[in-house]
Length: 255
Image (cartoon, one colour):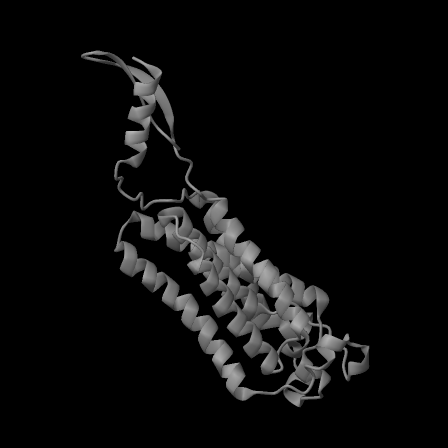
């Protein structure tokens, strides 16, 4: 069989319509479940022992802050605070529902949800570990707000948990869409829009400094990409020679 004929056959095969492979992840539940439970359990630690674990260090002097963060002290928008909560938790709920609408109740959905839950759990574990290790006062704590000044929650500003969660959730969804459908840039524009919205709302509400949300955006995006990336299903591929009525043919698939 001539080389041009082989090349034409390969090109025709590459251009032939194919069915989208819905299952893009491989799970290892003996590892994935313990990681998800252990990392996610730090949220419970925060609820039960934040007043004991957070180091309370105020009254604080805003003059010790950098110029960018200093201007945040005094922010206190209740509307922005509510908007941030709605955006984060609404997004976390909406993404699995959209996946269900797209895939239906099938194995691929279960795999997506496990990876999604693990990414959020790892995000939760990271942000809480750093929050307690740093114990940075929030802008409203610097401003002397009694609700924050006397609570352990008032000293868990760095880095911004809501922002990290928003970027983790949306990045994991965007990565999944890319692996399944080879989508373009639009899912990542949605990541920036949703995560950026939460970042703005958390700064405007006085819960976080600009430096808190900037670091959270980077860490959240990295988590939302890395956890799914570690689960990507390996594709089999290769070529083989098979007999045909006219001689032999080179057939195969690309990974």
